Length: 499
Length: 115
Image 1: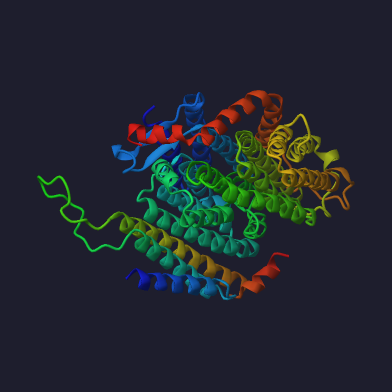
Image 2 (image 1 turned 60 degrees about the vertical axis):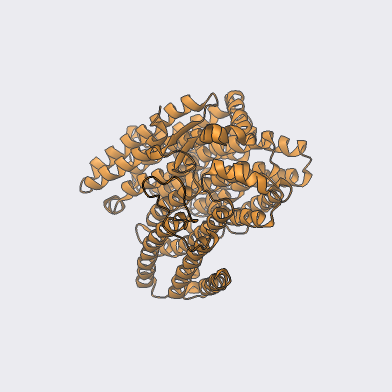
């Protein structure tokens, strides 16, 4: 129990080190990556079972009392994020065992993936602002290498934009941390929340908050700072894109949720209003950009931006119901988006292209894969009874209750356009007859094909299950949101009676 | 002292952002470097500039006779210098690789690749 919060960091680190030791054997690396992923999921399940009743697991690293040492804190939101990381790790590493090319594995794909997971997990469990910055850098440097690994020209060009903008965001984040430390004299998030409440109305505080919006906005891919995302995400192999789309932008969103419910909740009129405006524009610009693309992977990548808009919309509305919607949407979109990228990767593996114009007739050839795509795509668009419907429904209900008519209108319109993009992929890739038949690049036996599809089948089942058992998921998200809306419990759990 | 440092930080930020908006890759990376120096100095200044002794209590003492200097900003800056060193090293290699693969250091030419 005491060491539980540190396990999500140690396990991927150990896995990465073992993978590096076994760098000569591809088979061993695959095995280690799979076992580590299973362990990550198991620890996440343990943590989930401890925190699901609202307990906040706290660990002071090195036994330095908070607020002096680094504190690891896991509340319900963190625990569900850890669970999603575990699910993603298993699916993506299983998929990469099939679809990752040998040179990339030899140059360290698996250790990099595990280090990325360590950084993501670290960002989810830390309760210290500077430590959050360090975890951001850990996952960034791993993602830089993963993005550029392989060294194709497009990849390199995309990586430059990604690196430059993310470093700019890190510099902003660091400057924000510096000013906040100057004001409050602490970096422990719980104590910051405690100190900052006294400073409400201070202009400097608002400025720092806006710096954090900018910094996390770049990382999350929010309007108007998302241009690195469409440039870089569609360039690496599908497994890498799936991992990035599931986790990286979501770490930015998670940090924003954490900071703007715990610390910067003093001036919601202005700050959360600003986030809400950003959310609306993010949704709209993302979906419009996607509508003009004619490449399967690019459409999905640009769509990440519009989904970030939905997630952030809940934070902008800043009511318990809205945050419930945000958490529900996070759970839904991480699973569905990863699944869609893996399916796109499978299509590319079969036919060697992502272009909507060249592909066609896949429904006839591969009905199984097509059904998997259809279910996930409809879930993303928000067709009942799949998970996306309930997530969007909660958000829109929260918008109506808050009487923010404009954002509700935008969200509904964007939802329709999402449906348009998804049906576009469906009709071009799966439904229309192939313009000229493309040969199967990697013919597989029926059994092997089924094993290859297992991660995608798993994610699709989860999507359907999230829709069928929407009640319990909603209850959980609602309690997690209640925890976020009442930061006193978080502060008390970390600082005890000293607050 | 604060005023001088504030001006220095401002110049570093302005120079860094200006260089980042240039088309040349080398200028981009120098800009990033200036920006991280600016952020480091900002932490140093915001953390409080104070002439004071080391925050170490001699045996038997229970409080500081004079207000000591705050050691934490320096620790933060040290960490961030190490991180930005590693990141800059990586970025340099990435830019070199790009230059070798594409044959140009002009950001605008890279855009053509993505179409």
